Image (cartoon, one colour):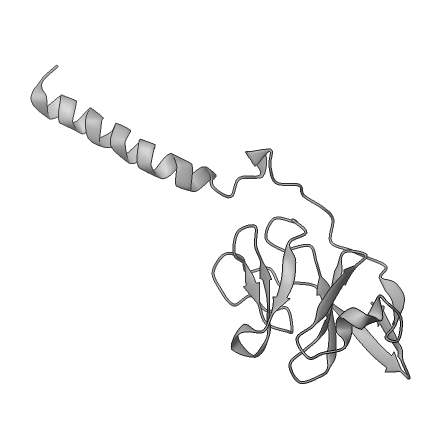
Amino acid sequence: MERKEFLRSLGAGAAFALTFPCIQGCSNDDGDVDMKPVPTGVDFTIDLNSQEGAGLQNNGDFILKNNVVVVKNLEGNFIAASQICSHQQTDQVRFFDDNGGIFRCSTHGSVFDQNGTPLNTITSNPLKIFNTELNGNILRVFE
């Protein structure tokens, strides 16, 4: 093998060795990614005076129920979003008080605003947002 041919083959091999793990980084074939369906038919209530509702007393608090993240945002409004990320359907979406309040998935780092709009390039798929309705101390989350 001539030197030029050897260097060309080494370059291609090195490029493959460096890029293959990156390309496979978000693959569905990982085996460790537990994909779940985005919740549908959501309709439940939370009594804000109950033990369950105690997790929503302060601005920025959130609870997880039926694969939904229920939040009392930084302005004191209730918001509900899918706990299942729109990127690769893992159940790791949580609320963070960064930048006025965002949803973030810890699996691959997807970030969404409170309307479900993606805020980074990890996914262009919006996060599903549910309706909320407060009647006295009863918070209803529904589609």
